[in-house]
Amino acid sequence: MNRKIKIFGLLILFAFTNIAYGQTDKEKALSKGMEAIKLMDSGKIKESIKLLKEAEKLDPEKFDYPYELAYAHYIDKDYKGAIRILEKNKNHKNVNERLFQLLGNSYDIIGETDKAFAAYNEGLEKFPNSGMIYLEKGNVYWGKEEYNKALSFYEKGIELDPTFPSNYYRATLIYCSSTEEVWGMIYGEIFMNLERNSERTAKISKLLYDTYKSQIKFTSDTSFSVSFSQNAQINISDISDTNNIKLPFGVGVYEPTLMLSLINEKAIDINSLDRIRDNFIKFYFNNKKNVDYPNILFDYQKKVRDAGHFEAYNHWILMKGDEDSFAKWHSENEKKWDAFIEWFTNNGLKLDKEHKFYSGQY
Image 1 (tube, rainbow, N blue to C red):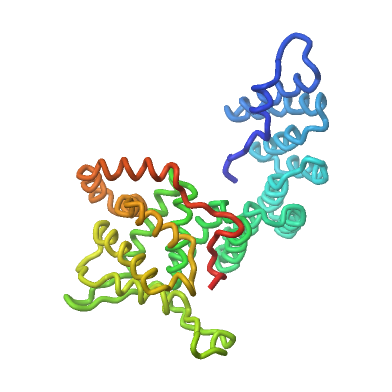
Image 2 (image 1 turned 60 degrees about the vertical axis):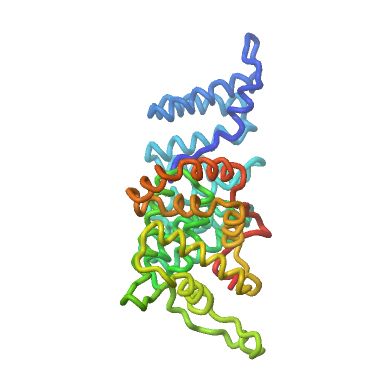
């Protein structure tokens, strides 16, 4: 599990607490807790554990100390020790989803998969929309290379917690290695918008570029093919009204629109993909595909395009797939790039319960 531990309020509280002579027990606990975190982050786990125990005794009502104490045992590979602390604090009045994440992970590492799932499920009873817990349930199957089972949990996490990026990341990796790359292309780009500057962002940028490159083929000077989906199934319920048959999105909407967008192109590179993606959004909305197949990502792409920044945005999305070409484009378009970055900083993709995308919508 990545160490993205928020020191739940400790930093903020510490900044506004008067640490001086005559400290209260809570202030002493806070001081010890902050020092323990520093020790833990520098690898001094045993010293950190000692201070966290002292902090917990001084302020037994605060959830942060037992949680961080359990985490210290976890990173010290004392998983049973972490489990004992976490089990004891499951009903703490200030418990949060991270306890159940860490508890399930601890059980999973020692091979007790059933107890891991029980911990995750208990967490979902308290926090039913936790993308973090759905991620961990999926990761159990990911570790067993049962990717279809893992995917169902990642996508449920995307549906219920659309601003949590890690489920998009894992779903992208799975779909872009499948016959249904279409979903990976959408999830991957949403992920990049949520997590803009990380090693994972760079990995997905290259993956999206490579997937375009591998799934768009120019078979001659006058012909080409695209292959981002093989699902051509139509549900019986969708053909009750023959005048309004809803086609499978991949083969019925995404691929035909993409093929229209390829006219006049002869090769796939970062610059041609900019033109192709620009055409795609133009055709998608001109042909009113957004009415039957609304898509929060395509809405955002149109917003970027309407603002005049789509060329720079497309180069950002795909930059790691063709770094030399990106560098050349950037050197010739610094003003465009700077204007895009300024706009992008204040106009990100907004996701919430009403504005989201997951493949089950279609």
